[in-house]
Image (cartoon, rainbow, N blue to C red; front, top):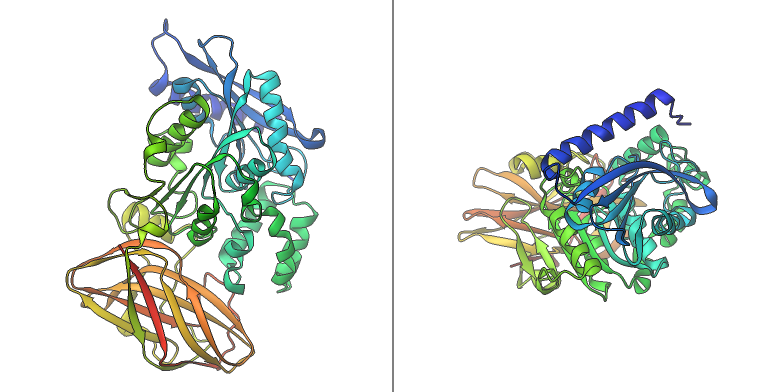
Length: 506
């Protein structure tokens, strides 16, 4: 159980005052001028009266209101300080009342973690109630947003509360099962990270305790029933708000494929921004109020849909992407429009032994994607050193003029397995003349039952510029440290000659 002492509370208040002071150096006008902002630390009654701790940032020097209201639930394992820098900027520049609160069950907010369950989602509405009644919030101009856990809550709340007119969901999940159990393969590093953070910073409720027990006993399929009611994808038809989503190509917790599929189903005003990075890294500095492309768009999104500002964001293409290996923003009217054509890479027959690791890997959650984004260091491989007894390796043609992978690659495989359960991991690399490769995208899949089947495997979406003189190489093996694979040591898998890879291109 997490207990916050008086001393810890004093440290928290000192930190927030320091953050606001730093933000004020950038934002504050001369002493005699207006407008400005004020920050208070409040206890807000959530669903059932549960005490939620919050920083409330209100505009000053703009009259008595009411003001457009923004509500930001905190991320998993993070407290209410998370968005205060961005909140101060939004209050000062645009006159919003912003409430950044600690999600139920974490840190000094009361209650237990219910994994975005009914009480946590209802908390968003109760905070809106409080903001309207006590902080000058305008009931007709309500927006919600957040990062990670806060993002998923925001989408779910928008499906339940018609007062919410605009959403900014960053590093979000839309399908919990697809995120953490892709193709029946446990995303082990992601699950372990979430469990550790929940146990360290909060008080797990019965749903989380039972889910952890099932996971520890290798019964992850027993966890799946909690996914649909906690997945925005199952409630997409109820979301009438204007939705902006920002995610990273290499998000190790919530990969982009579940996001692009969800985005395509939204029928109202929408915007999708995909950029290099790992979970929460692309928008991290913007939450602190520092310059950031994603948060700049968040501000414009709320300004247009809540304040009615004609800033042109509604006339821009709905999809904005930055290539995962560098370059400026590119735009498309839809995610499907990112793919202009496809090429087919024929895959010859091959055979290998399962259960043996190779040097082909998907990288480390929260590390590999950040290295790709900030230092342009990709997850690498030496193709000549990949063990051909434990992996299938297929080379595409040299791209003498270069090309851009743009969309969702799909592998069509005729697979024969000898074991009852086999996990496969497909990696698409850009490889130079020396055989050194950079990971473009990947995807796991777990097959049940021995025998032959046809498998269509969508890798994760990406936009990646392949340099002239390089080629694409597909590697498929049966062990990856990121995932809880189930390949049996010494089993076998073969790929038929009627297999191919469809590569989407710009």
